[in-house]
Amino acid sequence: MKVSFLDLKRQYAEIQEEVEEKAIEVLRSGSYVMGSYVKEFEEQMAEYLGVKHVVTVANGTEALVIALKAAGVVPGDEVITTTFTFFATAEAIATIGAIPVFVDIEDDSFNIDPKNIEEKITDKTKAIMIVHIFGKCADMDEINKIAKKANLKVIEDAAQAIGAEYKGRKAGTLGDLACFSFYPTKNLGCAGDGGMITTNDDDLYKICSAYKNHGAGKIGSEARELLTNKKEEIKEQEGQTELYDPYKYYNYLIGHNSRLDAIQAAILSIKLRKLDTYNANREKIAKRYVEEFSKNNIRTSTPDPIGINCWHQFAVRTDKKEEMIKFLTESGIGCSNFYPVPLHLQKAFDYLKYEEGSLPVAEKLCSETVCLPIFPELTDEEVDAVIAKVIEFQGEK
Ligand SMILES: *Cc1c(COP(=O)(O)O)cnc(C)c1O
Image (cartoon, rainbow, N blue to C red; front, top):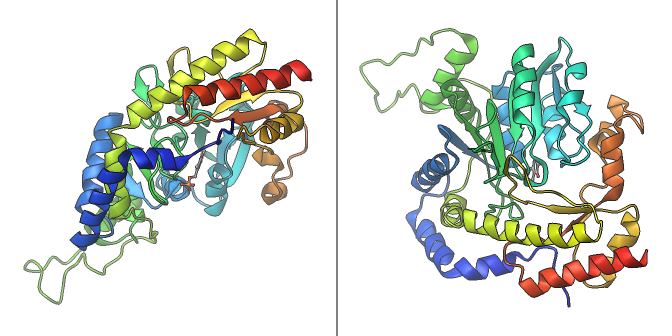
């Protein structure tokens, strides 16, 4: 039996009618960027997460860049982050001229190890960017405690963690700012690129909203006031005239063009209603994997004892990674190599001069981890087939 690592067509087929009807409605509305569909989605999402503000943006990487700028990170600042993550986490830090400072991870959770954070804090450190990797929340109480003591902002890269929980609170509400991606392969994916920033802080909300849209308009002037601590002298005149509107084509900050399309927001509204079901299906598959693999002494991703893992990925560990990927692929079982190289050893970061062996847990896990299919529409037979092949490999080696 052939099993795909991920088959997005199945989910689409289930919601095709509703999505296509809505997409046509948006196309006929003539309103394509931001607007009412986006506003509606932002409100639904704020309610789902239990967060005060949602700022949709063009993609998850932009969410990270804008959140870092809103957190006050400027060129030359250091930002502490995990080395076991998707490249964009640290790329965003480097993009704004700041320095990613990589920290090793916990052996069992794949998440940043809070025990390794404090020793990396210097007087240049401005923020900690944590990642809830594979859908399991990082140890936020410890991380927030360290950040508070050192007066650092905490940014969650929650791109893989929509719907995950930590002690009863959802990922995206656990730091100062959080960033999500709606890339099609994420737990909540749109039909292209999309992302968002969440925060409970009114000022950070205004600043992110201004940055995402060229620092323009009233929100731009308000954000500028917050960032400069100076009241703006904006000539309101006798109200607006046709030729003078102090907020139209007046820009107050150097920002970005990073907005969500209406058609993506409309699709995301439909899928958000189903997200808990999608994540529950992932959980069911994960439970079967954990049960069967633990009986065979195969180490895997684990459920979260204090929260809810949303199972973006399911990892098994093997000291014969290459052989396992080859065996599964030849047996028709889709699998994926997350992540082959920890970020501190990526070519793009060679200027930071990390050496092999400097972050040993992450390096070891990169050499051991293979991710298995775990999308919500997998059938029981397919899950059985994956389990059988992994156990067969384990028995043969
Ligand atoms: C997907 C992902 C991103 C980037 O999101 P895009 O929408 O692809 O830009 C960032 N961080 C992590 C951990 C991710 O998994």
